Image 1 (spheres, rainbow, N blue to C red):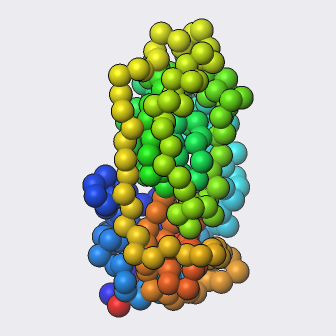
Image 2 (image 1 turned 90 degrees about the vertical axis):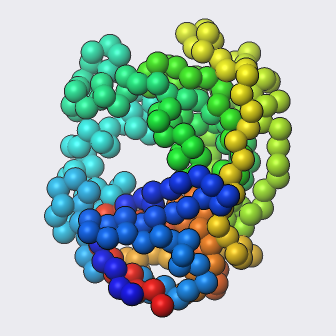
Amino acid sequence: MLYEGVLRKMRTEIGPPVNYFLVFDHDFINMNQALDKSLKIECIKFQCLNCGEDRPIYRQGFCKTCFFETPAAGDWIMKPELSTAHLDIEDRDLAFEKRMQLQPHVVYLANSSNVKVGVTRKSQIPTRWIDQGAHEAIEIVEVPNRYLAGITEVALKEHVGDKTSWQKMLKNDIKDLDLTEWRNRLKAFIPEEAAEYYIDSNTETQIEFPVLQYPEKVKSLNLDKNPSYRGVLKGIKGQYLIFEDSTVFNIRGNEGYFVGIDIN
């Protein structure tokens, strides 16, 4: 069956295992039901997630012009400590920034390939952990705005990593760790402004992904270099499709690409 649409990160539902849905404007694919089937992915054109124009994607699903103009790509997205809405200071669009920044945020530990610290809106848990391919995660603090989460993350990443090795994550080269112990160990390094929001009564969340076969080596599908690919889908982890020939395809990394997907 043939589906067409612009790629956006897959929607997810936690469960044993996670359920994945690739959603287009007028249709969707339950990706779990595509496991062990042959998929053909073909790049047709670009479609910027902001302006909708057929322009080369620059970053985060946006064309170059939109990336530097839309409030959805402000520096505070990747660096929460740069958030200023709590000071009533605008970056690109204060109303948008207040909606996004002035809501509960969580600083967490996740284990995808190693223990890392991260920040997300409370409403994005456990979605954020699933997107990172974490098989276990735990909250450290829950604060009322993005700025406090950002400065907490900056302080904690002096003592724990903040990056994931996506290759190790996809090969399932992982170890189970005691994140509660890690959380307790890091408590002393939480900034004074956020110390009152420390969480000490929660437990780890365990996440199971729908993977039939992990690759021994990974080779990434690049639609700019190879606009047409066919393979048998063997797993989904994070925002990656894993194929039988060890090819992996990062859906989120290809947002804004308008594709055709044939499943049989």
